[in-house]
Length: 247
Length: 247
DNA sequence: TGCCTACTTGTTACTTTTGACAGGTTTGAA
DNA sequence: TTCAAACCTGTCAAAAGTAACAAGTAGGCA
Image (cartoon, rainbow over the protein chains, first blue to last red):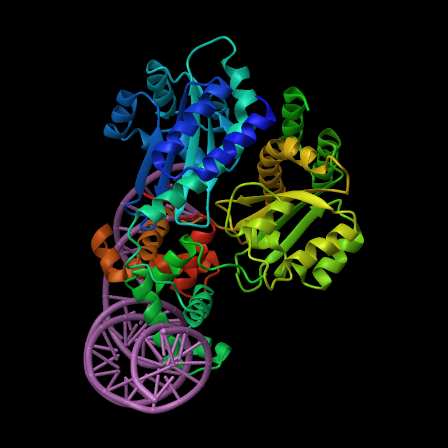
């Protein structure tokens, strides 16, 4: 692929104004790298207990159906990988990386291969939002499969982050933001210290107000974040990237 | 650059057994992409209040000294960017991306340019560990600077994640892990639900033990994580990526 | 000037967490 | 089988957080 073509494509991603437009750009990308299948999976972990999974992809419908019906994500080595690492990985290398002694991981790959997803690349994507994501491309059985994947890897990596950022942006603008109020400066300040384990009284000493005021701000933070108590608010704030290190 | 050369380099990163070896590999990488300067900055945010910053780089010593002495990181547009985005960015484009109306951001770039860092690329790196990082490469003033940077971008992106992963690994093995005990299954379970905002009593109902037992496990979690209370433990657990969504 | 938002502070009653006391059971590896 | 780690449970007192009551101040904007 020409570098110029690629940057054009990135621009096209950055300017897509709908999910459908994004999908089309992904298809174009697939053509350029000579790999038929792509998938972007976005996991929203605002609640870790019931995370949301959104997918845009041109994987064979039947495979996706089967995959989620059988909860293959619980055995999928790719899923395990993206929660631990951040570098792109070729699927066949996951066999080395992980311990498959008693695992159903290999089986997932075998099943996928039966649907034409013989080998692939997966790229973990982490963000300051509550989302974690994976971008994968997959290819059928062919002699130069690994070579094609290797050639595509760096492009996929950068394409993936752009795609993800745009996707999240489109998702946000599509949702009704009626209930989404920003935290105020003081609320952020109190929450910051709460994340450091400070008690309300300690925070009051740090920011020089009464303890009651701190409780007031933290109470408002809870409401705005939809948290049921302080520890929940702390968890949500960090997951959403609201709390930033004080560099 | 040839793809083969690049993969060799990646392997070399993955196998480096010391920070010095890593630095050498970075130098080789710089030669290959024809860009003189690189920097990996790793921010440990176990404590958001006093994050640690570690740097490996061949930036001009004087610039680094000045940078930290003057706390330029507080104005640096790159730093702002990496806390919000995940795609690689060319420095000159940050001017468009951010609002510089009243900002000291441009000034940082001007100062850097005076030390030979005329333009560059920066890549945000996020991990499941408590670290967030940035990998930058920089180039002096030359006609084809932007072209060189654009050509290098995808390579830098993938190189950056490998470099980061290896760096963190080396750092961990270098530190004394005397006090680092793993959380047990039950401790993780209790902490998971604590992150969802559940009280000890609620957790006891969920996992079918007495409230006292939950308190016991959470107490042990606090100790192991070095947390001073529950909300601190929750914050640390999420920052360190100990809590994973239940997909 | 009037309005809105953010910020500030107080009390009281109730719930939850923490720390310090102490000890029994289960499970897996040497 | 023995040992260690993990797991489980109890009580009491002090500290901290939550909920619900109420209300004044400061600053920006129309």
